[in-house]
Image (cartoon, rainbow, N blue to C red):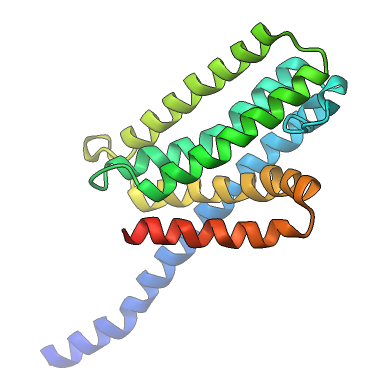
Length: 200
């Protein structure tokens, strides 16, 4: 009888596994939705061209541009904070964040300069973005602290969904505008390098 009980429990345990998978998938979609709604609202208020290197920001509102840049930095910083709890910062993720932020800062800043922003205002904006990104990274660490009762997989899924939405909505369109058909190949090369760094 015990054997039959065990086999029955094993077969039915797929219900729990399915529920967990559905819940994590829901958190990925929720993270993507939260980012997308925020991005949509900021674009409607004039922050949609925040990464444009040609000066299209001239038609946008300063606060929307600042908030849009902050919104872009939160997911990646949050995920970066999560990796600290896994025994150290993910080298692959850190390199990816640095390599994406450096040209992003150069491109956006040149666009803001062309739009008439003074250097002090641009530097103040990026300082706010750095501060909020640092806070987001700390939040990612704190939310997975066992003492806080946070569920790690769900938090990672939410942040991952937001990060994927940010890449698709913000970074890839701007990259394609500049690089054209080479963009896909560059994305694959970047992905391959990140895999190599993860395996190192």
